[in-house]
Image (cartoon, rainbow, N blue to C red; front, side, top):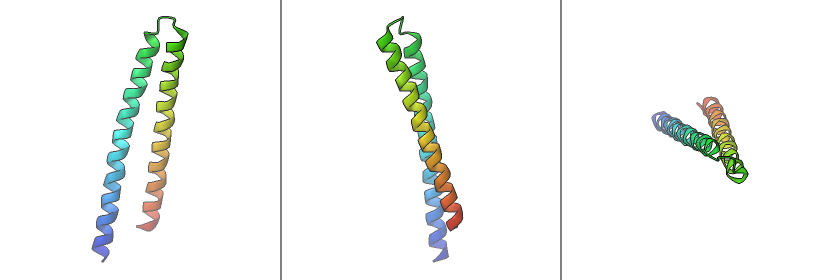
Length: 80
């Protein structure tokens, strides 16, 4: 039974690692896209605001993912 619990902990640990990596990659792309959109807004206030909102949303999402990963790691450490 202990082997099964170890497999479950390993599975979820790997799942969180993969999900965090994907989320970081998506956030980096979204921040880069927002930065590019901001630089090419050419004085258009609406496009600049949309670009800033994109970057803020990407950073907020990244913060949420990293916080969730931290909490999951703490819980997994307390269980295992």
